[in-house]
Length: 370
Image (cartoon, rainbow, N blue to C red; front, side, top):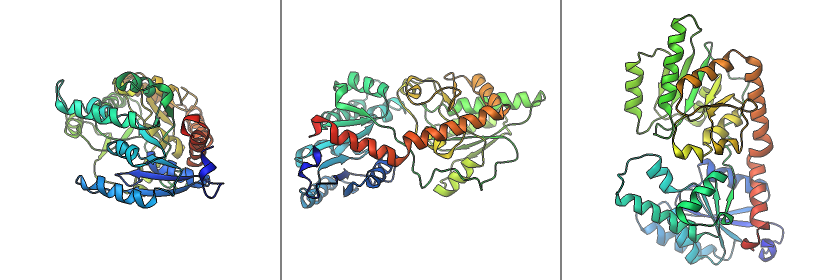
């Protein structure tokens, strides 16, 4: 057992190692979940801008090197996984979610075919993935991709869901719904996101309104590479049913605005990455207890079930998205069922205490970590 060398003999101590503070859900949820299950967390973090951060991490780690059982390299800290392997005599768990190559190169599509940066990001990921004893990823489809792209064995990876920050995303019956039926999209404006299909669906629904249907409004919250394109689409289509918010919102304001809407949207692009990822907004929608519509994909089907706890839409298909929005708007029974079943799924399998318990089970029972 991993716990056999722990001086307390009844709790595990995890060193959280990274170059970012654990404020993102992918880190925060698991650290909170570990604490709720009796684990102790020791942080070893340095966010200095220059290469001096690597030296700072070495010094900080030296002071606590005998105080923990296992080292947990945080999400987006892939640069320091090889360093952790060098300076720590304990097992290394890397909270990858996916690869930087995928998120920066494939998702944003900003580098040319022969760009040196593509090689750089691939190499950073390759070293990080091969330096860890266990790599945590978001789906079984992601495992397949990483195995093929970086030549790492599937049994070296484990799937864990991201979950949502319970302090931000939770149901609140005190927040009133908007008078006009409103759909909320929250996320980055990137090629893989498919926000342009939300705009096109809004256009379809506005045209149907002109033909006699009820007006349906959209609240779009986000920013990113495609912001100019999105603004231009809204202007060119002369859309009167979209409210666009690109400025920063506090956590409380974000939650209130989302809960004031009637349906929450996921992502819709016909992009290869969308077949492997389960978006953060999925967990947020389930945590809020909101009806959820997102694109059909192999990765989403690992967690979700169509017409049970979500509605699936064909990729890159604004007409289908518009139809599914109308289906939920006009069927309050189905809308309430999806919201309830989604929230039940979150409480049963995705809240931070359950995720922390599952994580502890992985790191205490896997023979390759003991």
